Length: 266
Figure 1 (spheres, rainbow, N blue to C red):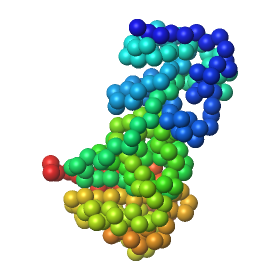
Figure 2: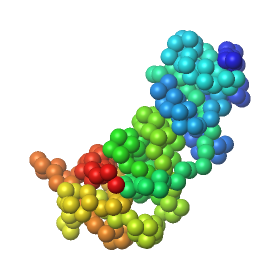
Figure 3: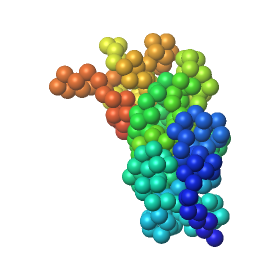
Figure 4: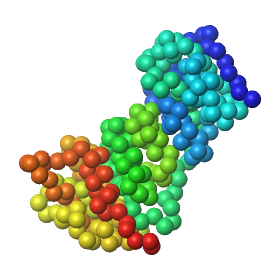
């Protein structure tokens, strides 16, 4: 049975996940916040457990009604748009937020053949966009160095359109380049995306024909570390026209994921 609670005290402690904009504090509490009915449904479908929901009144019997039906006795706090803005500090474009429990990171599928590796990317928008492209292009998993921003931060979840819940991801457990040797030992052909002269084209057949390929992407501006590039099997460059010298990391990732996708049925 739905547990609808109208908000009367904007400072109530149970609203803390929605009033606390410090993402690291939520992470320490084992919680993240998903925004919009579509993203919340995706998280629930992936098995994440809701702690509470905050919804604009019209959404309770509207776009969020099916979600509320799935939540059982999980508290659903509701208020009008003006109150929600006071609680969260910003105007909700989708009218619904849901605090959810974090869980252990998932292992990559045993038959994984394509993974993306993100090295020290801190921009939350870029990480969300990479996840969305990776999911769409059939990437089996994403490995992040410890210097990356958390994929379960609110902006990243929103930009990814919930794909952070659909694709397996985990941390490398390090920020140095030693993770490349571990990948190679596990049978991955490692391809560093970098703007250098000693590169192969993204159309190189070795990439598409690789049984297991790890596409390594670096942060905006600095790109990958030199020792990371040196440790990889191949350094790859995307040919560009009109004098354009680089692409946003999310755009470069989308191109690489598509060009190196598996086309057989192995």
